[in-house]
Image (cartoon, rainbow, N blue to C red; front, side, top):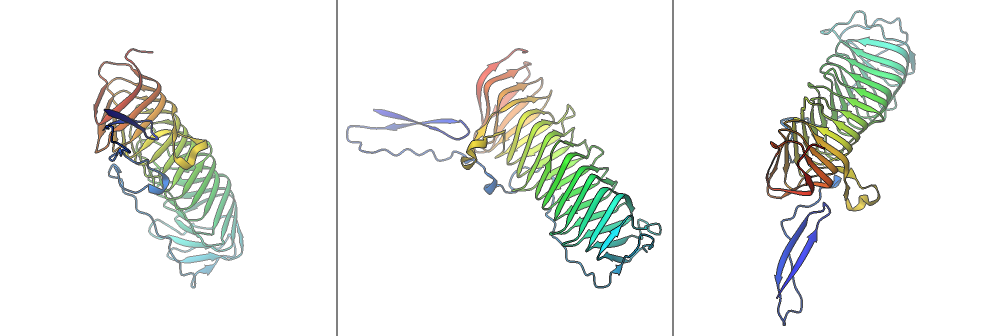
Length: 379
């Protein structure tokens, strides 16, 4: 008299509908309306929970260089309030001894600036389209800034350093072995930044990504740091040391290892966080979000593999909203963990091997589906 129809969505959730049939039934209709769709890169929007962090997208500026003074020699002393331009090749350091925080100068790079180991103070450096900076080491000190226009290139074999209240704004192509951001420094990446070793923002630097940021080894953060990854943008690294920082993701983030540290901090994930190993504390909030591992051989259908292991530090507060998913082989729930399902759609906490609950005070509440073998003792 009844036919039971099961639907399994790409996140592994099952729904069963009961359909009444009789001898006269020639066809049946079964609707599973209300199930949440898989969020993909194309559907990423700024809807979701940003933790109160709203970073606007910057507009690339046009510059009037008609009155810029040509720089022809490193001995030429730059004066505050003036604009200068390099049209050919320039080697060495710009002489900035007469400048101050209230009396800065601007240098446009239309040609090529070759440098070895240079520190610049109180200088706004703008690399124009087709302009280049090549060399080894550049430090931006005392509110100095670096702007890279689309079609411009900066390539450093050692490192690029900001030293307090400095900004790197990249609309072009930026490549360096290492980058260091100190207190209140900002990397705004509007196109492509490649770092072949590590990005160190552990003194309170900030990352605003509106393009592709690729770090081959480690991204280091700390409690004052804010990382914002915009829709349809990507941050990739081998190791991500969040260390109490604030992280907002509307795009794609991909790491071998993610560790917030026991200080926790916050992660607001509104799209995709691909990871193999994860340790998370503090606030973890997913809205239409996924924490899993990308299924490399089936990207067209946007299916997800399980991460190897996801561990929640003591007293972590996890919210899964509107059909979000956390998927791993092993999920470890430590003392004081609370996991709450919110919104109109049931969210999924899925362990393909085991959910290890290590203390009696772990709590699961709300619109939440938990799948996997559950163990309620210490491993």
